[in-house]
Length: 290
Ligand code: GLN
Image (cartoon, rainbow, N blue to C red; front, side, top):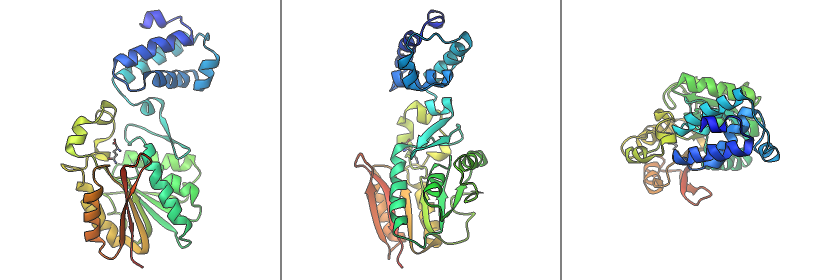
């Protein structure tokens, strides 16, 4: 395969590469092959289609071959190219952070909708910030706010900090190391989180891209997936200002259980479950009493 592709043009290379990735069990072999080749050539995917006869250099080909073999081990494309788009912004990602997911964009939309009706909003906590995708996206869209981006992992915080700098919001995104909300004594207007919520069974059946490569600490929600939620909700109820909002991403099968948990801990609040665009339960939305 390597030999036969070594002097081939783009079109030929992509054909071989997608066959290799298909055989390795990748879900989107052709797309992955194109994204990785475009990355190696420093071009866009559209450029590949415009230059099907282009012949890459042998050093480009050997870089490509090594990325293809890593992808064949099911290492996620985002780790291989080092970035992922989220809410229209490009975020640097490393294997120390969860790769931002499109379904989490719904959390940003709901947070921004609520923010538009809450002129007093000044402080936000993003609990378990990882790459900083949520914290940075909110800071970019809400110039009046400061965001406390908390994570237990110093390596994750270094990435979050870099992403804050890259998007020009490092002066308003403050990274804090610690467990959930422990490093924050103050009260806030808005608390957001995408905590680890996969159950043991879900982790065991997750695709290799997730189970083998993404940080377990960002995914593992204990036996039923709600272990972190049980710690997070009481901490949040101590730190939410009157009229404040808590928005937490949840697993699609957790809506009813999370609703019961949250109603118990926030007896005077309005508590709802919101859906993602695939109409699956995806978010806990708590509006604290005034
Ligand atoms: N949605 C992620 C997945 O299915 C899980 C993210 C999380 O646990 N916060 O891989």
